Amino acid sequence: MSARVAVSQSVLSWALQRSERTYEEALTKYPHLGDWMDGRIQPTLRDLEKFAVFTHTSLGALIMPEPPDETLPIADMRTRESAVIERPSGNLLDTIDRYQQFQDWYHDYALEQGAEKLPFLGSVNGDADPRRVARDVRSLLQLELLEAKAPDQWRRRLVSVLEDAGVLVMMSGIVGANTQRPLSTDEFRGFSLYDDIAPLIFVNLAREPYSAQNFTLVHEFAHLLLGHSALSGGDKTLGGSGEEAWCNRVAAFVLLPDEALQAFDTATTVRDYRAVAHRFGVSAEVALHRLHGAHRIDEGHYCALLEAVRADYGGEKRSSGGGNYYNTLTARLGRSFATAVITSTLEGRTGFTESFRMIGTHKRDVFDKLAKHLQVV
Image (tube, rainbow, N blue to C red; front, side, top):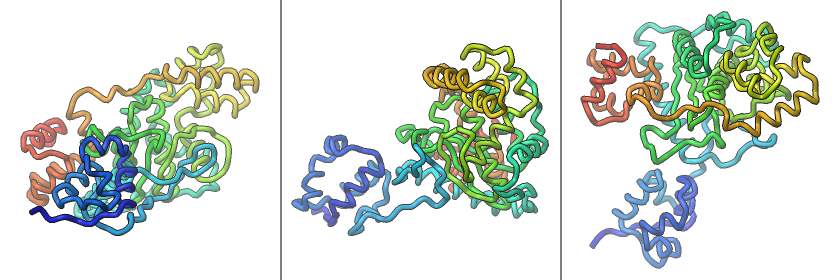
């Protein structure tokens, strides 16, 4: 007879909520779920193991008498209508945990290679002028001013220069390699994980427009300049106070400096503003905020255009989520991290089991093809 395990209704309900599974959905797979919750029947250990996989929770958590108190390990800067968003999802918590593990591994690897603290980390404070900081960032990252690039080309450029500066940049729209666990941009757009040796930026793709991804990349870099880890939402307004608003302004000034604003002088329609904004890798909304703040567009015109831009949000070109598997895998791991894992493994300092776990595969063929893709071998 199979061993049965005592479980509490509150823990089962917590697991469903954390995984964003509905009771009805779970009931189709576990017809005795209602009996488990009422205490009429206890699940078998095998049933509970399957339920743990279904809800992306640990078996240990499911046998606790009360739900664990899960809190975000980094500062929560997300706002929705000026209110902090409560109760992080399991997808978000598991994503942060995953990339913290990557960061810890890379920190040790980089130290072995003789890495030292990156001088720009924690180099400014929130009282610094965002415009001056943005000029320094453009100089540090060697960002050209006027290049007629599309937003997706700007993203590749931003990722490249950030990685060259020593920042780990990782991007994904799912938890790990699990396509059944999509991340939501309604919950967060990105986060930064501060570390003297291995600072990390994560961007939530989730079919976001490339212009939004560009803004998130620079916004999270601004948090690192302050010396902070932070979880960020999607508010791109350039007013207000506090760290999130300061990082928004830095990002806007980096992507669209004052000398670029004259390029919008001949724009009249939403289509015009969007076309010019794309040359700088930003959204028309960010462009309008900048133009309004610089008094290059009057209040009435600004409000009318902003309303039209937001109504036509679907007009932004979005990342498709498809494409070459190894390009996607490299983006998910970050080129710097993936290259380090492959190199360390081939040199015998990291075992293949650990390497496969970090890459997210059980196949040597995937490892070998990734190494070739990264030109490690």
